[in-house]
Length: 183
Image 1 (cartoon, one colour):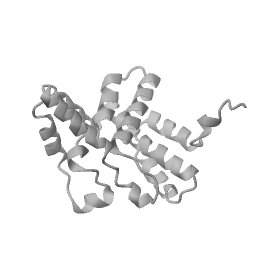
Image 2 (image 1 turned 90 degrees about the horizontal axis):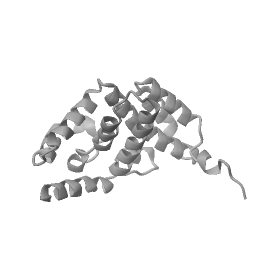
Image 3 (image 1 turned 135 degrees about the vertical axis):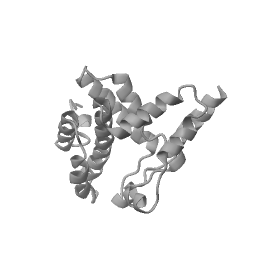
């Protein structure tokens, strides 16, 4: 159990590491753990929409897709121009003492390759999580998200991802709050 305790403390670090790209937006803030939770929940919804998906694989892939960042930190696209992140090495060190380490590596490799239906949906969910944050920031009056919407929307690969993103773009971030409002 000592190895599991160490793993859990390592993954817990994702709660403390803030995603670096928000500095360029000038507003918004999100930890890697918050992003991973949202991505996993989006994948849960995707799996419920399409019953032909391996839902466990999809949700788990989303849950761990940024796990290496507990060791590497979160590098945004500008930082990646000047520094390299050795995600494979970080993952190999993270999993080396785990009996189920191969499962983590297999899912990470599949996610990064982006060839399976689950990997494509998980990658889309990763982007949709960001779209949700951008939409909230935009709806609350901040400047900046309008520049990013076309860039992030273009990254989507699946029909489901594109359809979900379109619906998000057409929905105000707090609309759910006022649904069925009565005093």
